[in-house]
Length: 154
Length: 118
View 1 (cartoon, rainbow over the protein chains, first blue to last red):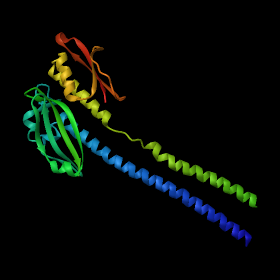
View 2 (cartoon, one colour; view 1 turned 60 degrees about the vertical axis):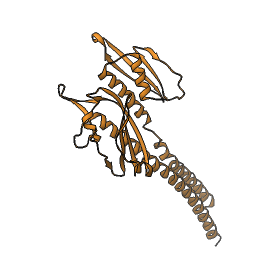
View 3 (cartoon, rainbow over the protein chains, first blue to last red; view 1 turned 135 degrees about the horizontal axis):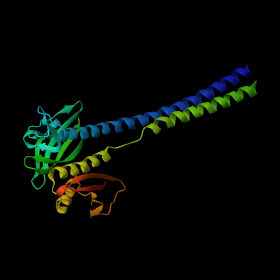
View 4 (spheres, chains in turn cyan, blue; view 1 turned 90 degrees about the horizontal axis):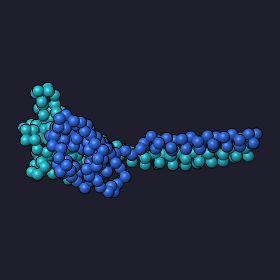
């Protein structure tokens, strides 16, 4: 009987200690996971926005020039990055990738002011957004401009 | 018998504590908050160099006005062949440098370096 009593106290103490330890680990890990998931969401938004603007200045997509409107040099038979085809990017349309959507696309030509290609203010009010700018040259005007794309998570 | 049991409990306690410490420290060591701001600033600095290489207008005023247009409010240093064309007092500790070798008149090569403090 005394042995059994000692054993029970041992187990109780061990159980309490283990429970406390695992509860504190679980709460710490849960907080960490919450913080990490929030961070990864904003990181994904940042990454996609940078990727999209990189597409816009380095590649050429005739179906949707938002995904690329770089000038094609017929002599060199290659795309010239950061040289945008003016006739092409004017027809850019909004595009979405899952929960991410491009809410606005505009060009701020040096000395000529900002000119929006499309703009969706509702999206910018409702979600978390990030604006990314790239410096480009417009062809054939050879005018320098800052391209701005606002990507939102709806 | 009791002494053995006590020794065993102490061992188990130490092992448990070690395990708990390992669990607590492991994921945080792997996870570090990073930002793509560095990449973004580098992309913009590269854009300036690419546009200059296509446009080929290397006047000091034009280069400096382009820098002010792309990096408004930032401290950016411009160096041509190691000589500083502009300088400023950086307020932040983060710095990125981008450089390019370009061909000037009579195909003479020169280096343009941008140092962006952000």
